[in-house]
Length: 149
Image 1 (cartoon, rainbow, N blue to C red):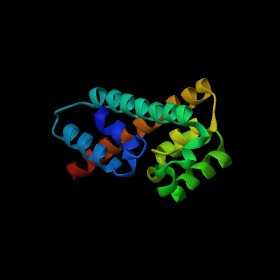
Image 2: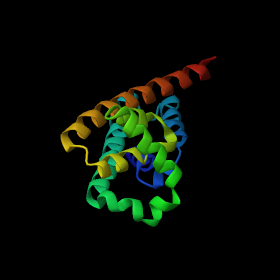
Image 3: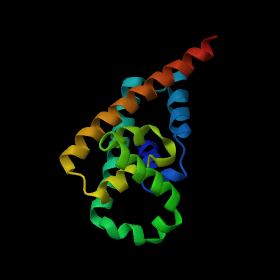
């Protein structure tokens, strides 16, 4: 669980690992009574939080020279979306980025590049990951209820 949650939001990898994989795995484990929400959701939260912070600290380390990398040049349009989201919404972009799959793995990186304060990023990312985890649980239970019909 935490590995899938980590990969779907990690810089670069998240562009190729769909959130549907995590949702599917959690739903199957829950429906088949292999794991409970109390077991899965904290692990998914931990994976998401670690992934976001890894991206943030990579961005802090690389800094503005990130825009000159081959990765950035190749994904210029997606990075532009992430940067516009951060410019428009400020710290709330962390929350928005957690729920928008196309930019989920890029918002933490770009936030780190922008130099946002660590404590501020951590506080908002904690709230975003907690909200995302709650939504994951609601979706898993909702899909289970669909199977009951």
